[in-house]
Image 1 (cartoon, one colour):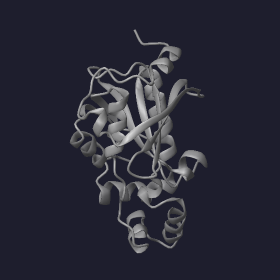
Image 2 (cartoon, one colour):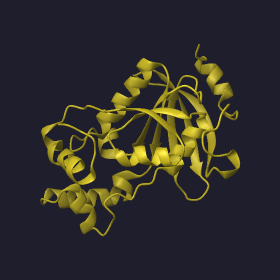
Image 3 (cartoon, one colour):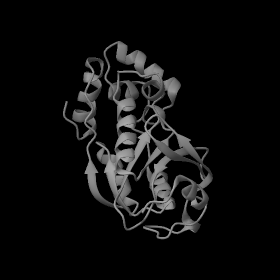
Length: 222
């Protein structure tokens, strides 16, 4: 039986019962605080993490008891201010985040690591500059390259460390991104299943999704 939200908050500072790939001494992240977070989808716990090797911060939204031997729904979600907050339909980020929350709420167990790597790692201001180039006809890959950035500058190792810190080892990954799957496997997490995120595509997002599929290898149909 899963613990109550109150019991999970009390246990949040305790070491996990199992460790999949690394010890606490080698982790490059630390948990700062945990609290209850009621949402429109359901009641979750929210935890704040900080990197020990950079100024990056992470937020984790999770629900249910985290156990290393239980395959658990997880998602790494890269921050998208325009999609997650403002409801942009140029991308599928906001609907993906909300769908992942719904899946976890229905399952009663799962975690979303929300990482601050806006615009595939280029930041919100440069993302807006990239949007301007897209208005002129560039796709998302071409826009990043024209600005002098890598096509995708994100890394996910610390996200995997956070999932391990929560106590997870076997995961069911909610993702269409093969790079995220590869990163979790390389970090030592056991991927039991990939859960595709099937989101109805808005017309404004068609070019964006086509680029993700054809140039970035995302596992999507639209």
